[in-house]
Amino acid sequence: MERRDFLRLIGVTFAAPLPVLRSLVDPLRGAPAAIEALTPLHLIGWRTPRLFGPRWSEAKLLREPADALESMTRAARADGVDVWARSGHRTLSQQRYLWNSKYRGLSTVRADDGSRLTLTRDHSAAEKVRLILSYTAFPGTSRHHWGTDVDMAQTFADGCADLLLREGLEPASSGEPGEPDPGGEPAAGQKAERGADDCLPAQRWLAARAHEFGWYLVYDVARGGVQPEPWHWSYLPYAVPALARYLDEVDADLLRDRGVDGDDVVLDDFASYRDRFILGIRPEALPGSAVVAPEEPSTSPVPDS
Ligand SMILES: [Zn+2]
Image (tube, rainbow, N blue to C red; front, side, top):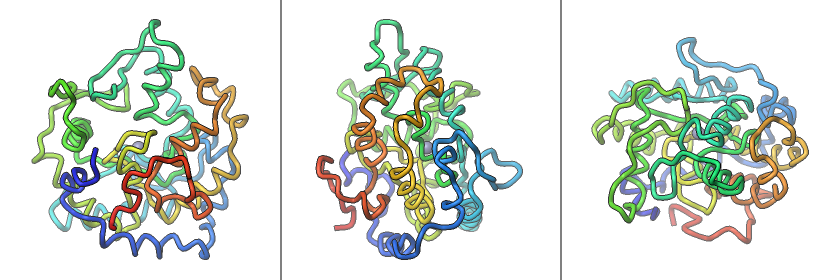
């Protein structure tokens, strides 16, 4: 997807947000205490920190991101727009359930052209892993483990995610979009085809104002790893220092033997995985020490220039 097309999709530019972002993640400020308190086992979702959020919501987060999410939701409502988080903190075992379900063919994966695909014995382990990774992080490496990131939606029905992707990506060569289908969760209820009228107001509002509350898209364009995820928002004042600690303290050994199908494919070359999928995010979301990534494809690294 071209950056221009994404901006057209969300209807704003990022010219305003970036200065705010830089001041929020001032490296001299040091990591917030709640991030300092996380152990490596918290960072991989094996242990769960104390989480916060409205009682009615399943999306729980560390306290400050939870408060920032609530403020943002209230502000959106005041503007007449419903936004909410359908997924917040996830444990490694929850991520493993998503992963193994796809690996075993119990739920579908989204192919590069947007169509849905069920993995079978005919796929090699490497091929399965490659297909799953486009939209599902390897368990233990998801940003959802940190309690700083959310998947936003306007309704429970996941058709919005498909619509946002379809609107944002270059048309597939067949011209036929994939059937609407939940992206992550195998246990999805009824799904409805959502239209732009249903989905885009929330997305436009978030694109225009989420930064005021510390929230940013991190998978904004394709960088050779995770595909663009216009629904995944990250509370960067916490997520940047969380990522810095993750890079320092988590290695392949810590992620081994946790019951994840095909884990050798990822863990035997974890450095490559890390560079593509963990560091393949908008540059402003990288900790200062990680900004230099010479082998990253340099497609529009600075959104506002
Ligand atoms: Zn997400």
